[in-house]
Amino acid sequence: MLKKLKKAALARSLWIYHVAASPCNNCDIEILDLLTPRFDVERFGLLLAASPRHADLLLVTGMVNKKVLDRVLRVYAQIPKPCVVAAVGSCAISGDLFVDSYNFAGPLDKHIPVDVYIGGCPPKPEAMILGVMRAIEKLKKLKDL
Image 1 (cartoon, rainbow, N blue to C red):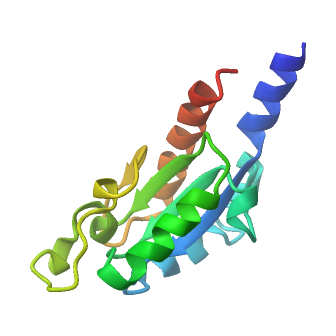
Image 2 (tube, rainbow, N blue to C red):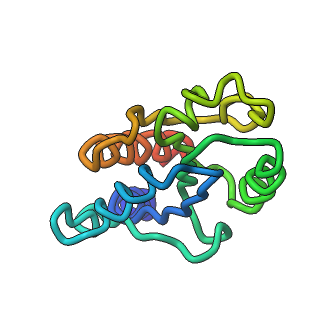
C-alpha cells in the first residue's frame, strides 16, 4: 500500500531546479513560457524548487563553459540522489555554436550523467513537457517504486 502511495505521489509531483549555465536566454524564455497557464504544467505536478536540495530533476540550459562548470558540479552534488538530469537545448547537449570556443568545457554529459536530452534551439515547451514526462518515468525506475 505504501509503495503504491509513493508511486502515485512521485508521478504527480516532480520538483525541478533550473541551472542556467551561460545560456543565450532563448531556452530560459521557453521555460518561462512553459510555466504560464497556457501549458499548465502544474497539472502534471511540476514545480520549480527554490533550492537544489529539494529537487528531483535538474534542468540545465546553456553552454557549460570553464567558469560555470564548477557551479554546475556543486549544484549537482547538492541534489538528493537518485535524481534525473535533463540537458535542455543544443548548447547543453553538444555545445552547438560554441563547440570551437576557447572557453567551452564540453557537453554536459561529459561532466555529469544526463538522463534526458531535450533538443532544439530553443526547444519548444511541448518538447520540454515530453522530456519531463520521460524524466518522471526514469525517476520511477531509479527510485524502484
